[in-house]
Image (cartoon, rainbow, N blue to C red; front, side):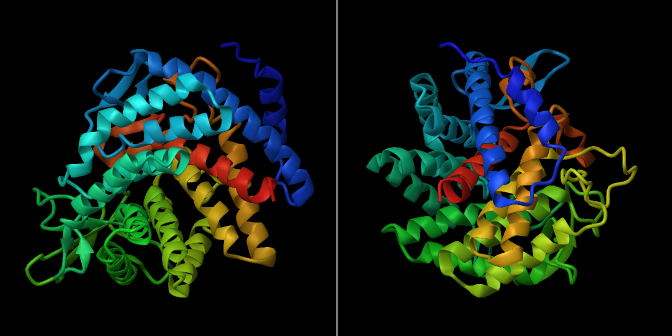
Length: 402
């Protein structure tokens, strides 16, 4: 397939992305071009990437020093993002090669519907099969999502009123992490689409516990809350990937923001919306948030302003803000859209976005997985691409076409 040159549009957007957009009319003109450009690049990049994907593993990152795609086994928490990204690209481009690869990747991770080894079934199975069912309405996909919800429900601990995230290990007794808020969207969806009502009740109970136990007075979040499973007592509040137990790990703040927005969508409980807005205020008004709105890997990271950025946190937050604006009005709504657009503009400039044919086929550069564990530092990460593409789609669907 012939891919039209992206050079001119990339140069144009590099200039435009230096400016904050305030007027909806001009903003829409810029975003229309930005969305078209990014999906054309995504089509090209993922067509390149799929040539290197193993038959039984899914892409995670790219080692530039070795010119090697990094892939993971199917039970790795990120394996739903590759087929999910492909489905977003197919939806915009109608490229049948992209669709075929998405369907192949879905088949690879299908056994995860019965996996109970951790809490990440939402990431694995809803970002993938959720999009597949939305697009193709195949009842087989719906049943797989139902099965995944049943598997996730096995990790609910009534004494803790939470879904256990990781299994007991050398560091934690019965840990729950803020990331778990992202897996509740699948539970709500199943209950609201013919499944057992208990799944949404689990999601609600988990959300209420997390609101109480994870959030500080300034609406920043701990990363990990460790429980005594027998009594439900909180043993400690700490971090595993952040700079310190008292710090605000950037991606964790993004997970919580996104998660409470989805809980409001599902329940219309105003407490969740208000909580999401307070998380957003902490994030967007933080004095350590850089002008381009791509955060450091932790808001309290040392060595600022040369600390590593986490572009994945910006991508997640941009997508979350697009939805938060849907439930807002007036100046507040415009702020959420403008800040989300600024993040997308920054991620689209040459600092954070790969050039065609580079980065192993990934779109976004400069992400951080777990700096404190010396893991995935300053690399592309598959979920950054997924939420970047989702944020672009959301702007197109909600603000450009309406």
